[in-house]
Image (cartoon, rainbow, N blue to C red):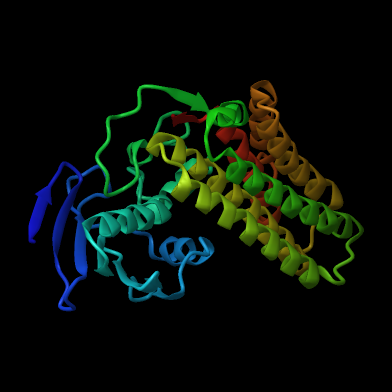
Length: 327
């Protein structure tokens, strides 16, 4: 068996392994496809390693951001991932097993591929990219290594909780947001300390927050992998974008222990962030628009960088409420 398939997005090569009875598949995203642009890596290496770790799937995993290379083992298969868009899967039982594994890896790495703005898809879905805030990123239209018709339907980010009820794997999606709620709870505990400028035990709170967000991201990543419909699976990228914003908020809050700041400016930034999260959960598009105006007014004055980053995380989430996503 030796097959080569050249499609609009990918190049496949399927051939026998050196070990008799097994199959190797090589897949490459090529330049000129919607995935990536000439001269760029297909996978953002920082996000590549992060995504492979947080899915909680592999029996073993080694990933180097510097080398742009990952080696994973799963169910007896050896999986090689290169930042240039090439994936090699060895020791698959047959072609079906090889293609199924490739689909899982492609979905795991979906959010790491640079969008047309040059930033990873997760960054774009988080509301951080102005260029992508009012349009559907072409990479979001389908996961890598598959060729499906373009979606003709879309929803706004804030409408996801209504839409998710019709999705077969909704429990994983809801579990991810439930765990993210635990994470927000820790952020609120930290907020109480920052208001009093009490910096004791904040490292312990940070560890609790990290555990919560890791559990949330694992559930969100599993939703992307296990959702049968490719377009519906893209809804998991919404969750990962939200997690990015809230992680940015926590990082900025932790930096405040070494920065002079006024309680009033911090509280304004915090309210922008937490109000936007609530607006997303409630699909309150009017509130989201009002928060964006508050953020822009807030920037008219000078503030310490961490305080600005806290407010910016809320600005990004507010954009997510009305950002279109394919379904």
